[in-house]
Image 1 (tube, rainbow, N blue to C red):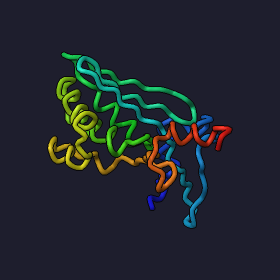
Image 2 (spheres, rainbow, N blue to C red):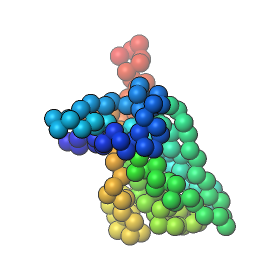
Image 3 (cartoon, rainbow, N blue to C red):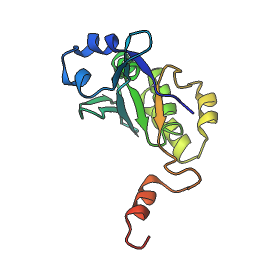
Image 4 (cartoon, helix red, strand yellow):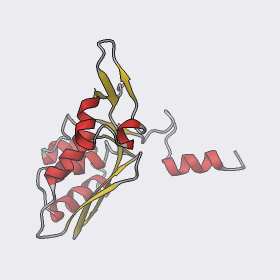
Length: 174
């Protein structure tokens, strides 16, 4: 069981302002037994897209819908510092992130170029290399400071994709 991450409210107020709607309405804040104001870390969705000539890290704030897209094409560099700043601020929510997004993200954060990321992408998808073998092969373990929720197993024991599962749940035949 992974417990939610709480931070001092001051951390978020300092970053976005304590009078903004983000802190006052969209975050769960309470006082702990010591009288300190604590806030549940906000959530953002992470999306990775990888092609031989284009790489994208997309981060979307779940409460506000604000989006950040970090793109790389051959000959350019990824803005690793800005990505790391957002990853430290949010709890990251992915679908099958442990098996794909986080290993590819870890390699990108080490400075891999588009060609290397595409080859690594193919190892995971085409060659079915498990995430733990991938991380060993590329020596790129996801940073331990990433707070992550993976929703790949929507119903424990049910081995279908989220799309298939939701289609079955919404079907008139069920």
